[in-house]
Amino acid sequence: MAARNRAKLPYLLVAPAVALLTLFVVAPGVYALVLSFQARKVVGGLLGGGSKLVFVGFDNYGLALADPELWASIVRMLLVALLFIPATVGFALLFALLLDVPRVRLARSTRLAIFLPYAVPGVIASLMWGFMYLPATSPIGGDHVDFFGSTTVFFSVANVAVWGSVGFNMIVIFTALRSLPAELYEAARIDGCSELRMALRIKVPLVLPAIAMCTLFTALASLQLFNEPNTLRPLSNAISSTWVPLMKIYEDAFVDSDVNKAAATSVLFVIAALAVSFVASRTVSRVNR
Amino acid sequence: MTVSVNSGRIRLLPTAALVLGAIYCVVPTLWILIAATKSKTDLFSTATYLPSFGAGIWQNIVDLSTYQGGIFWQWMLNSFGYALIGGVVASLVSAACGYGIALYEFRGRKVVFNVILACVLLPQIVLAIPQYLLLSNVGLTDSYLGVLLPQLFNPYGIYLCRIYAASSVPQSLLEAGRIDGASEWKLFHTVGLRLMGPGLITVFLLQFIAIWNNFLLPFVMVNSDSKFPLTVGLYSLLRHGAAEASLYSLVITGTLLSVLPVIALFLSLQRYWRLDLVTGALK
Image 1: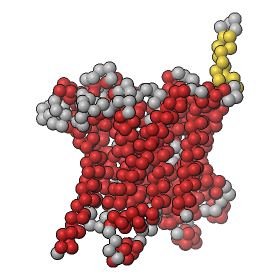
Image 2: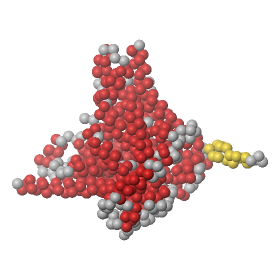
Image 3: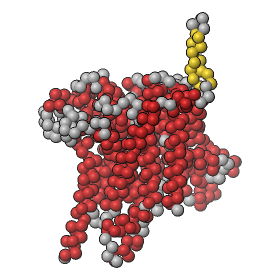
Image 4: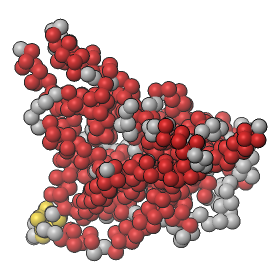
């Protein structure tokens, strides 16, 4: 009895997770794949007529990839990513190294303050920054600087994203720094090595895996960029309804009601995300070695 | 003497840089606090950095609380409901799965774990629209369950739980329990869950915040106001505000009221945040 129980329990333990995985990851994925190969065609006839789903092969993919709005949204996403990734990882690394300086003051409270935005939803962060950018209410000179100009808007969007993610990445790098053995520094200190040299020559190379992991996190986050531009949109007409790829997919699915084209774009998007993850995680594990 | 003065001066720069970073992170919240004290007309007319000491903030809170029959508080309740229920259930599902994979040999174990690991790398948010399309076939859209169910699967949580279980639950303890006649199930919930405790709290907090912060899933899934979480509710209020500027002060007040409880929760649970556990790093 006990032996049988022992053989059964692991399956029972894993079952809920596997069921959820099947229902809410695999099934939607497969369903999107099916939809992406179909299109709603009007079937006319003398008796009214209607529409039905027919198999169209790769037509939706062709349609999606030929859409200049999709490419424009990808370029805008890349521009934001170009600001967002280095700024987030750079500041996260800087703050983590500063926190690790021996006897630095106010370390606990500043660490907490920098981590706090992590608990603020992207939408709420965008609302706060949005009102700070808005000329009528801006406390940071929005009446002199146009935060929603054709160039500045990229900085404005990236800034909200950086604000929300520096803290978490700082903690990841800081944790890695803390797990390094203290003896490592003793010898260097005795040799008269300055804190700055020690940070650049010893600490940074040793936490390279954590830095690589943060780069992967932020690269994935840039692909998913949606909340910030979508929330800032009602405040400015510099942001179009298809500003980034996810907004474009949303627009296709819910505004243009072209579910099949949206499904095709979603599938392409998932493939792109997995490709980024795969390449990046390979890089991470190579750095680890 | 000179040495200590010298090293004191050197530490000033890192401290100053950290303080600057902290200010950058705190300023938006402080400013929203100031802006929320202003009445609708003051918001656009007074100096932005000066708070109003009139009845502005109370009037704003009253206005927000009476807006559409107090729907703001319904949103607040929904957000807490989604995050709390989703966080607890997702952590239990993750704990069970992580424990099972870490401590038992069974057929399919490797496959299950590798698939889950692949899911960690798949941004869940790209699934929101396919999830909506699928759930609309079974009539689960525009329901609490439609928002809750897809967020119960947390691959990163399972990954962390596997690490915690492997490092905190010794096989020898389970063997001892077996000899004493305890059932496998009993061992899981008395020994396993207890030893994984600190890690589980971290998994719960991570998932709580992930659900609390989620926007796209409830945004596509739900269209009746009464089921919105705060993020979707405030966004819809802002959209109306674009046509009617007097709603802006409601949005600002709502933003403040939605940030405060999380910050309070965050600070009070600080003790339980095992930040070192977030990355799965274990001593």
